[in-house]
Length: 332
Ligand code: TYM
Figure 1 (cartoon, rainbow, N blue to C red):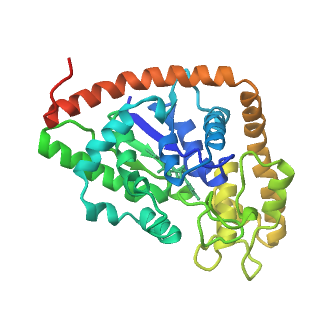
Figure 2: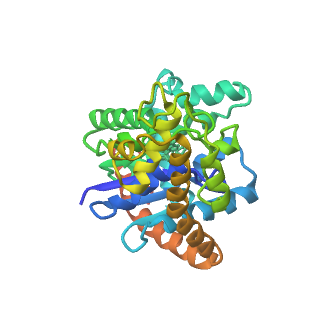
Figure 3: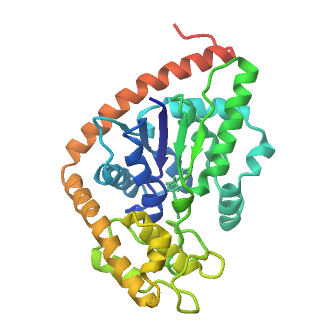
């Protein structure tokens, strides 16, 4: 079975609908056909200097939401990045393989450092994509299910794998991005031209998995819509309605043309009212299961320990081969 790897940062108390539709629901589906490895990338979260107590809490919460959404620890490997030291070790090798200019062209780094100012941005933010490449390459990953915003990082990962292979001999599998067009970019409900994001300025624009269902329904009903009255998928002229249709389709399993036909002659209000139900029906059970899992942290920690043990077996083999290839003498 082909192997997939993916991860999310534990940088918020709750994942949001973009994480859920762009990544997590795909991860769950891919377990049937792939050998899956899913990681909570806690080392990546350090790039923004989180409060230690909040970070600890958010690591468990993120793992709990993976499980609640349907990641099955019997079939898939689930672990925290910092429990497998090979990630940080391979990241160093990747950093030495990456050009300074190449890293400077990463748009996520450019955006984030422009927002914070160069002085306030850490070097970790700059080398973030090399740690991400290490995450993926340690496991011989064939495909990486993510949202559109990760495409450039994956392109860099592919370049680094190819560069290493041509310099030191075939070592890494060159991974393919697995990005589904329909859900690759879910937009902010209050600003449907920006992606839904943990750092959005409008809390009303982000649907959180752990929101109370009443809050979720209200956010959907208050979503910004477009001028006109026709429910039609048209991302250029109707970004708000198109986003709501994309969310509806992803959760209800009905196609966009079906939904358009269904809402013909009805207004935006009907769409929002029914979508609020579709979303709360989908997320309600995920929220409840997450809260149950969080009430039993010992069981959660056992699952993460078992996942780390399995991941470490694979990662250690890859790192040893890499160290040998680049000319580091084996320790004895
Ligand atoms: P992160 O934590 O920002 O996001 C987690 C996943 O959610 C997707 N996503 C979205 N998809 C659709 N619409 C949105 N509005 C939206 N917002 C977020 C992201 O594309 C991602 O798939 N760098 C990664 C974490 C990472 C990683 C890895 C991923 C570290 N190492 C190795 C894959 C493989 C990140 O910051 O994701």
